[in-house]
Image 1 (cartoon, rainbow, N blue to C red):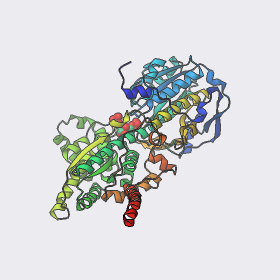
Image 2: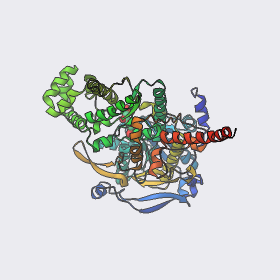
Image 3: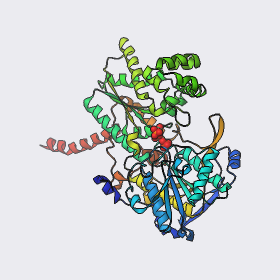
Image 4: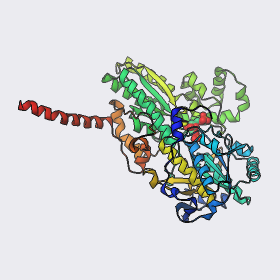
Length: 584
Ligand code: FBP
């Protein structure tokens, strides 16, 4: 084993806390089924597409009997998509469950994502190798990848591997797309009369794989805590030096859950929420004005510093940018031969002038060249622009600088503006999982094993009641088709798991909206500090404000309120001293 840090050594010794029911012997845990379920919409189309797996009941584990858990089984596991803290613990929970059922059962890890399954590349996971990755971050144990299994050849190759390896089950650890794949694979295997069951596990730091049944995807907790620590540190630096504005872009391909959670944890001056920008049809100019309002107001209080949080997906939610991106994706795909011959940015720009609609070209032309060039970078495997590569934070700084220069001319602004930009994304995806993610992931993996041992397929491993202590969590399975609807993808309607965007009527957004006008002007920063792995539960085991608020259990304490409380407390302390003086 490579040399490891002291923290890693200490984390190896950590025993994840389990939901009460999972502490029973595996043969004493039984699946209890609820009523048949329906998809969120498009039920008819989905029931036809998933003839064998549609509409299965929700299932919960309870104390009972399941002698089947002792059967010797062979299981394959895949890590799919972007890294998220806790992935190794899902594998650990799955591994321990399988071995607790029957020590001769085997677990195979497919290498580098779903392509490991189609290309038949795998390793057998054994005790010693597993132990090197317990409670660690990263997906490096078996690697991850973004290959989508969609062609008939890929399905045939997946079936071939499952047959060759005599797999009783495959566990796919992934986000909405990967779990859509899991549902399709489950259906394909049943239709082909194969014994291989497919179970999904909800992963993504983006936090957008959640619904009435899935309280959160794993990794969101640790990633948000890591970013919030960094944001808090920057806020404190800004409040100490009092001379810089920091524009911080935060990962989240589409939804703004990460930005919102970090805002609730750190109380920055501004946090943009893409879903709100889209709902209010805000233009880039209006967003710039909104940020400038804060800068001008704070400058009047002699506070020429601040922090702005920008969600990664923002550009795709600004209506004029959304049209530009859609047209660019289309034009660059349909005229790829012509476009790919162009080398310089100037040539590409001239070509776009003739090939884009005038309105889209006008938006493109209004962007600084360096940013405009990022809109033309390589597309992802699905033909979409890679938003993590567009430096929205820099674009906003340029727009703000221009606007402030105009305000200065008209004497409406007399402050100083000096900005730094940051992008936090990769910093958080492989962090040591927080206790919450370590526990949650282990339970998800162990539950996935129990689902396999209970003979079901096309289910997502589900652990609920997450705001309570781990021993009160419940475990079970949710039929994947229950979370699906039909969506237009590249010109055709496809079954997909519905992505959860930030709800503007939801409690987390409302809590933020209630406080943000104060934060915009008054310095109200809160400093969460580093993730704590050891110590009292209120410090080390708490999950996100998002889940607490969603479950009606949390509220933000603003710095304004905190300092009011502190002032009261110190006034009370001074009171006896005053009285004593008066007596003298
Ligand atoms: P998943 O949805 O696959 O978990 O990945 C999410 C994410 O971390 C996004 O936040 C980000 O936009 C994207 O991955 C970056 O992708 P890549 O790792 O390919 O650069």
